Length: 426
Image (cartoon, rainbow, N blue to C red; front, side, top):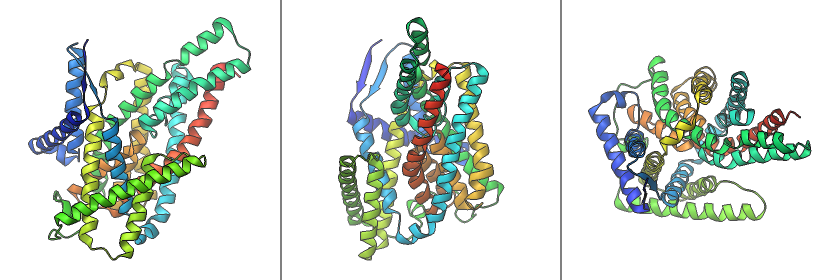
């Protein structure tokens, strides 16, 4: 089958068309808007479905050149998240960040318990079962790509330590060899399910607890999303300045990234860009910057988020999900059911049982199954229907984009070592 490479700018154009098409479908089918499914997710899913159909019919395999442009919009988006963190918000959200960070770590830990536990019950290799836990779920494709080879190396090291050789060693290594493919397929499953579940779940919480505001319900203008009055003016100079400010934030983030790596610390580049955005915001606050610039920063962030999510979804290789057998599907469905229960009984209640907590739940499901951009897109879709939550849009990126990466890495490392011992029998 022929592989057609879609170059970067064509990929970008298709991503925008997917957003427009998704918004068109939201207007055509009100149920999509009712349950807060974002246009980028709806349109992107249709386009990735077309890619799947072309592949299954053996017509052509589409390969997208998207890594560079996607990283650009990802970093711009996180810089915009940082620029939304005013000093007052940092003070107000500190306690909630701590609570949410603990909840995220607990979720990641239990995700691995579920994957390994069900795997043992179904007779699945522990390392393979672990590839349906917090590695692809809370970790996403990045962790799936980085930790799955580490799991294989851990098994290999224990085999050498135990002096296991010959056919037995070959059998053990053959059993764990599919780990990277399973992890990446599980991450794709998580991304899709996170997109489909996060928004509707938050909508359910808001309706069930009667937290909707009838005056704002269903309105979708950008000024409302920025938390401003509908008459707030925003000039061309504000948008231009906002783009420049976020580029500076990304530059600061890149410098911080290089400096930290020099001293042996490896923070993700998007987290460094978020810190750059926080520094830009602190500077702007000291200059008593007009509100319209802050609104422009939000708009550029929303623009970057929409493109990143759309590109991420249209480039999904859905045919890779075929590699998931019955036991893998059972374990992954268990993860989806569990995170909904977890967010309903723990995240929502411990984060305040209010509107902000409902939006945070959308964020928790988003990065607990997929990735932070899924969180933000789901939160944005819900807020467009109701009203903006500055607290949620500060807390979720800080925890999901930074703190959870650290805690999840520690949890994953310990579970890899545990599962490797189960495989080798040591």
